[in-house]
Image 1 (spheres, one colour):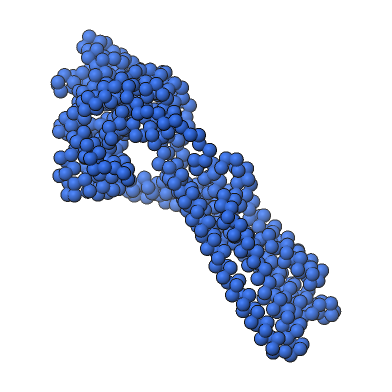
Image 2: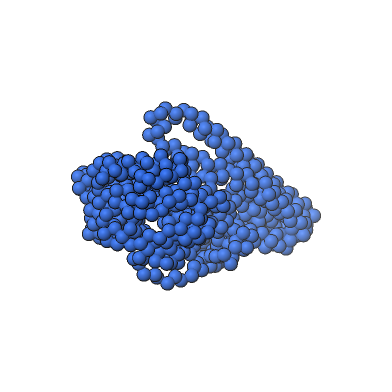
Length: 583
């Protein structure tokens, strides 16, 4: 798709249509026939005034009526076919890009932070599809026929053609003015709408805190401010489009009357017939109708063009990706080699020069004060954040050598904020794998020590947990998240504060899970603030300001005679004391 970017940006709608060549050809053919059949009314009027009335011939009128009914029937059928073609093109665009748009949303954690709720690619797909299903594209395909209609006007008489040409220039100028004046307001309106939806989504996700602490009215004031900005921008854009659309419609109606007046003068001077006078008036109206319709649909066209441009820039469709060699499942080691990390889109390093080797059967606890970079390091280890410098390697191969889905099968990740999806417990544990076996799901639940808890739920593994696991407690969500991380025994498992919501029973299950991973030859990284999570680890990495302060066997790093820096020392002493109590 990248090879067509210049064409797409130059004419987004036709660039979109060019991606579906067969549909575009069918649409062009049907538009051609529709526009030819549109001449039926004008020529029927011409024949009635010039042949039927002067000759007082009812048989001629009957014959013409039969022909007109037949042609209008074909016209109606072709219009239906054209709009169905447009609907199918919209459906094909949705099928082709909706999956990639969803992946763009689902993988947004590894991309630079942008304003809005992150759902813009999905809305862009809907915008393009809805535009294709409306009357706008038909008007755009009718526009190239305007010169043909004007040529027929000149064939009737040069003065009629000249009058129609002046009107065409005026309407075209209004369309160009619409394009120049509406582009930026439409972009601003879309941006504010995205901000508005993001704020509403955040309020919904945090409704418990909002209700519990009673600051809903304060948020309402912020919502009103955003809504007012959106409404003002929307009304400004709508007023502009409606004004120019009304002016275009008035111009067309005035021009139709002007052509009728010019035709009347020509009839009086016996330079044209009454049929030509009436037919040319209808023909001019038809010639300018596509432009008038295009102006009235300009907001939809502008929105679809901007949506298509965003999709073209930001949503990869998978074309041109190179074939990867399928590497064998990692079994030996995790290596961090002079790793530097920053948030996606930033150049300010959070993690600096971390190097370590972790071998099969080992578990490393990462400790440090808040904002020392622990969670950032976890994101880098699992590949969420690309490295500024250095590499993360599994069995000596950098993560970039793995296809994302293949890499995901070898990684288990429990983030600090556990987020589950609406669905059943089993679906969440199985990562929504459609081919998941009951044996693998139950094995993951047992490995996480959560089997008994799950079967105690009303419907066991088939219990639906609601959006973000709202049916479950925080501790239950964390334990099911652990089971998801252990599903199908991945080699590398990264747990970010896995015991923050656990009771004593849950912490014991976590310790057993860590021991189980080590026993089967996996590599495990545990980020902890509470010492109980470090009971089963054998090595400890102390982070301070994004750098490795100490790394080695747990007993040596946390031994009493060590005198760490004051900032880290109190934290390590707490961990050491907690570890002694647990042991």
